[in-house]
Image 1: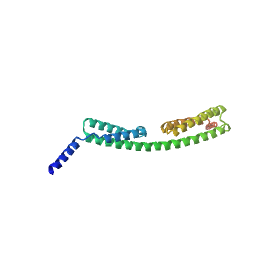
Image 2 (image 1 turned 180 degrees about the vertical axis):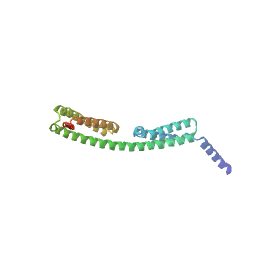
Image 3 (image 1 turned 120 degrees about the vertical axis):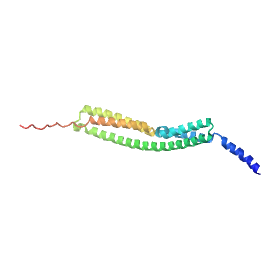
Image 4 (image 1 turned 30 degrees about the horizontal axis):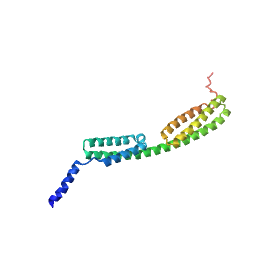
Length: 192
């Protein structure tokens, strides 16, 4: 009976010692990497994504050196890093989306306020030329705000954030041109 047991145990130990490449785990790691890439992990969770890529590369290298235990460890690390990268990317994308949507609301509000200031500018003594120039800028900005809104609708939050920053700066520059003229500067009287 003891010999029969050894006939079963020895081949099992030999198989464990030699092992096979962790193909299933490497495939899972690659699938997790693909999902992370599709979720924007390269952009939003670059370090974690890079760690996942590196771990999978190490796993493949360990397979070529027939160190299957090390290959398995690297494949599992790769999958874990890829899953973390996916989670981090989702969180970062959600935060960016909230930031951009808030900035877009504020920009729309500023454009509305700018149009009201523009209407009041002639009464405040602003030159007609400055009013016309500012009116053209505000009209252009309104069209560009619609383009930014389109970027938000297709979830291109990074481009939208950049454009919002640029538009906000242009709006504040345009509004500076319709500030009411300053009154005469009075100096101190010289003592007689």
